[in-house]
Image (tube, rainbow, N blue to C red; front, side):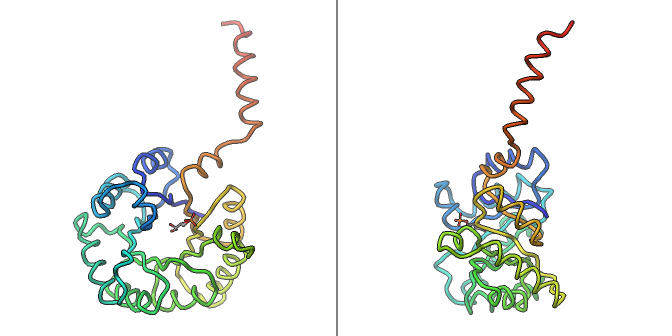
Length: 221
Ligand code: E4P
């Protein structure tokens, strides 16, 4: 399973890129708004900061309601970094979003259908040609449903029907989500930098380092 980072924060993106674990970046309107920067400018900065990834998701804004409006926005987003092949247009799971997905994927533009909460939504997005679908685990868990089970079932569906759309497990809240979606067959998990930090850590690693440091002081130098 590959890892994407789920943020519009440039510092966090650079830190994750430096350690070599990053295959992509996802953003959404809430994440961009948190940064207090102009959307297009930040997408350009991200594309330039991570040249060796497969995908940077830029979501059409909530003002785009019809497929035509989404496609018009997508056409602008694509140009941001000289038709950067990594730009991926993130579209909402709506009838208009699916129509835009079909149009853009036929034009060879990468697409990510977001806000997926059921297997049927994932099936529709895949049939509309989505490069990626994003089931949201944490938000399902928040309403006492099982987010990981959704990923398991979507992975099974795609396998049984030979669909090549990739699953991005999104709304990931903690390391156990990462382990479980990897075992469930997600192709990618998109995670905040705080989760990447948690993935690195283990109390026995910290204790081990402390012991090595203490013992090293006693060694003959
Ligand atoms: C994914 O693409 C979304 O940006 C994200 O994972 C949403 O996560 P949240 O539920 O923590 O907002």
